[in-house]
Image 1: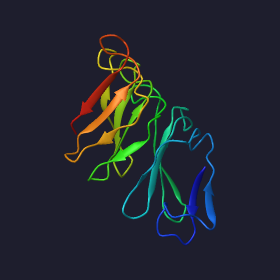
Image 2 (image 1 turned 180 degrees about the vertical axis):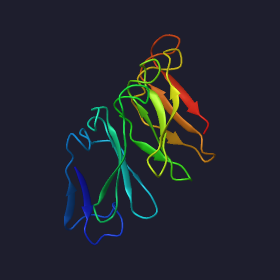
Image 3 (image 1 turned 90 degrees about the horizontal axis):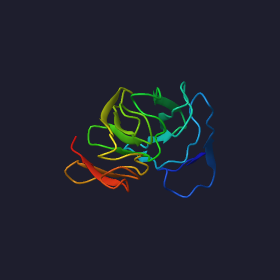
Amino acid sequence: MIRKSHGARSWGELPSRQYRKSFDDDHGTGEDRLHVLDGKGNLYGTTSQGGGAGAGTVFKIDPTGKETLLYELAGGRDGIFPMGGLVRDAKGNLWGTTLYGGANGFGTVFKVNPRGKETLVHSFAMADGDTPWAGLIKDGAGNLYGSAAAGGAFNFGTVFKIKP
């Protein structure tokens, strides 16, 4: 459940009254991921399930509470279950990971532009990682880093870097 303070200038201020957004199967369920704010007060996030294929969604909620479904994962090549939240780059693109799916079924890194166009950036292949459960972090140069729970030389996980 998303909460927004009425009359507050940002989502981070303590609420006196709250806006609540309820999710459903069509717009996504399992909404408990890390969120990203932009300079206009729009909140971006993922749902780990729901959408047309049940594989998760990427959404935007503006400061008035209006929801926009930016992208619905199809559950195959583009990934299944975005679990780690999102990071936003300087161009407004949203980057995230999926737990499963991709070319090999071991998870993906994806990018969704501000208009909702999704790009598959990387499909994990066991040797470079499997089940990237955690989200991504961004350094000052715009490089993205993350970790996968399994895969790698000993199948105990990996740390990876994506250069956009």
